[in-house]
Length: 209
Image 1 (spheres, rainbow, N blue to C red):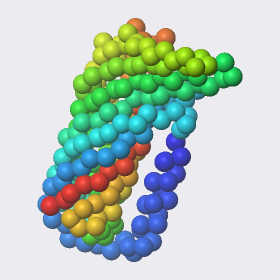
Image 2: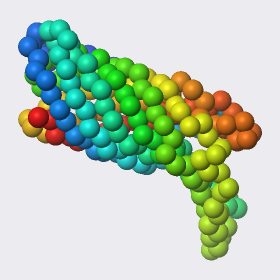
Image 3: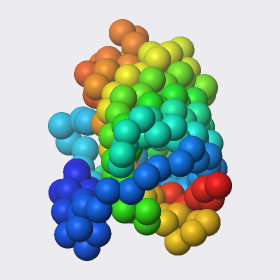
């Protein structure tokens, strides 16, 4: 996704603006929520097929060195993907929703008191799965409910995530990217999804204290 390049650019810009100053850190806690733009790593899937979802969560930050802290999190996240195909004869729009309870553990580098960069692994547990599709032909529209459900997908997901936060105390704005490293589909759904893994852009607003 293009979001990975954007995150790198944001990190470089923030480093230049803050000068990389060392700051003594304190224990922090926070809550957050926001928007997910998600898809799966399918060969024919791209940034135009993003499913809109959400995430909400809590976190705690524990200093381990100057400018560094460890941050465990607990969050609920609605990911998945979307397919949209348009021809002169029909429009097919399908979506897959994969909801997870996620447990990330991030290493946080504090560029200043107002900007930090996070990176780390996560483990996620599938809470629910569903899919639906709409087929439009001319003036007719047909809504279909797929038989894909939680049993078709792996119960556990592993991966990496990275992001940045900009503090407007006590509020902060966050940008992040989730990179799944394991395939999401069980054997009975591999015909549809192959070895596809989760991908997600995260835009957050939070409160730190």
